[in-house]
Every structure is written in structure tokens, then in C-alpha cells.
Length: 185
Ligand code: OFO
Image (tube, rainbow, N blue to C red; front, side, top):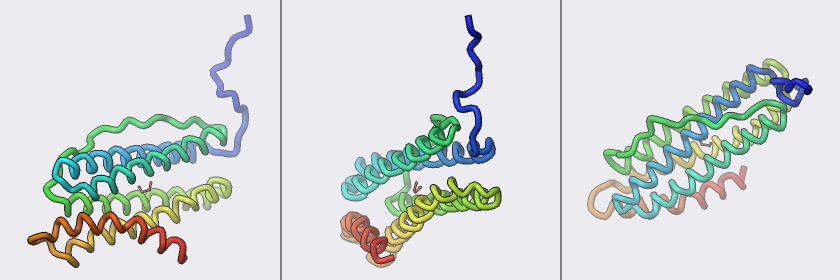
């Protein structure tokens, strides 16, 4: 009987092992983003912040879609996309403000990670992956702006009285705002 090779089916490829590992690291980040926003959505729901909760449920789905985009790319390029281990997710938050402060910090960290990947691909002349990553570059610009606008609402409206209720309502309008900004660019 013919001995089965342990090699992957694809014998040669242009995607380097290092780039594959970096892309898999990005998968972990996107998986964590999805889990993190899901946890935030659930906490918001328990606190009566219905609109923020829906916003974050949607956002969690989007992050999963980003993760799957990376899965498809890595495998199509002859690599192996790995299901990430997601642990250490925070379940409770001090306030609605903390939720969006952390969202903004997290999005900035994701942007930095994407930038590193883009820089790496440019340096090694992997222009196919460089090109693929441009979608993530634009997406991060949009998501960072969205998170920043959410954080600004706390100072613009103020948290006293009906303030938190109004902030929650305004968060629901941010997605439409971000889509408009993206179209105008
Ligand atoms: Fe995946 O876009 Fe934000 O994190």
C-alpha cells in the first residue's frame, strides 16, 4: 500500500511560513474581537442598553466575518488556517462608557496589528497578500472612527439624568453615519 505523505496537498506556494503564521495570529485577533463584542453585547442587554447591545451583537458578527475572510485567504494560498483558542474574555463592565472605551482601545490594537502585517508583506514583496490586506486597512479606518464617535457621545451628551438613555439611542445611528463617511471617501 502506498504510504500517505504527511505533507499538505499543495507542494509549492508563494505564501511564506512566516506570513502564514502572522495571518493566523490575525485570525486570533479577529476571533477575540468577535468574542469580546459578544460578551459586551450580552452585558449591555442585561443592563437595559438595548441599542448598544444590538450594535455590539452586529459588530461581533462582523468580526467573525473578518476572521473567515482570513481563513479563506490562507487556505486558498496553500496554507492552513487554524481555529483560534479564545480565552480570558471579560464578562462584566463598570459602565457603558467602559464598554466603548475598551472597544476603541481594542480597535486601535487591531489596526496596529494589520499595519504590521501590511508592512511585512510589502518588505518581502508578497503583493498578493498586501493587496488582500487593503480591505482590512479601510475597514479598520471605519471601525476606529465608529468607536471614537461612540466614546465622544459620553462627553457631548453627558451621563446624568436621561443622558445614558440618549447615548444608547445615538449609538444606534452610528452605523449609518460610518457608512455615509465611507461612501464619501
Ligand atoms: Fe476586524 O475589524 Fe475591527 O477589530
